[in-house]
Length: 288
Ligand SMILES: [Fe+2]
Ligand SMILES: [Fe+2]
Image (cartoon, rainbow, N blue to C red; front, side, top):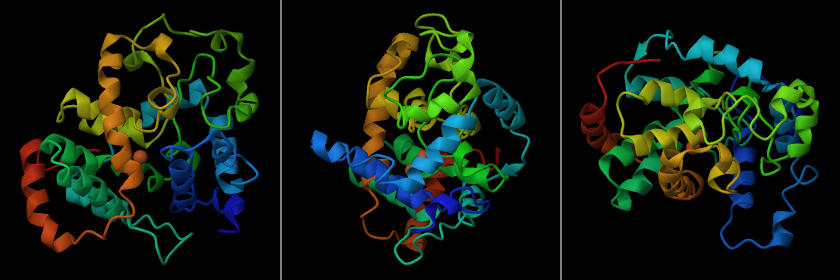
């Protein structure tokens, strides 16, 4: 996609998403050596770099507090899981029309890979709903406020967050209160108290928090917090519960990243299974 830098600030759809996911797959390829790792820089990925420049510049602590207030009250209406998935499916990634999966296909590939691996039913349900929070894009939120790695706000940035150099443009970078190791937090306060950068992870957690087990909620809430789950950063903000849940987040991650090459799921054939699955865990309509 040659026009990535322009597309990334576009309004409708997620033009950067395909490129970002390839970037993630490359960044976390199993057995990758240091030399390969260096390929994932701004020069090799201008669209992804521009996306993170915007994300790291505008995701201030104050921005997060404002967006949480705007969305975490779940006042955007009631939808069933299927309705939410069909709504999300109107989001089109026009960067790669030939090979790209629809949003529903990515959800089904993730959940079907779990099912094929005999993961528990609550996890298959989690796999299906994990990206439904991307409907934030359809509410008009910019891509840099919906997808991409998440990170704590209100305390010093870890250099384990992707493209850390772009944090220098964030107004919080010059606020001394936010730039100590703990910032506004107590040591080992627990991630629940930490205001993460705003995005689809935090939002889907709010929608799902009454319906799924704790392991599932950690998978949803922190699946893009790569600095923590893949690089071990921010342990000083974690409590014992967070550490106990980390293996669950890691167990989720490969299904999200590596199920994309699998065969296209057959919706009509799979629907009865998912109707039963959703009925087991969710009310007919949820607040969004
Ligand atoms: Fe996601
Ligand atoms: Fe995903």
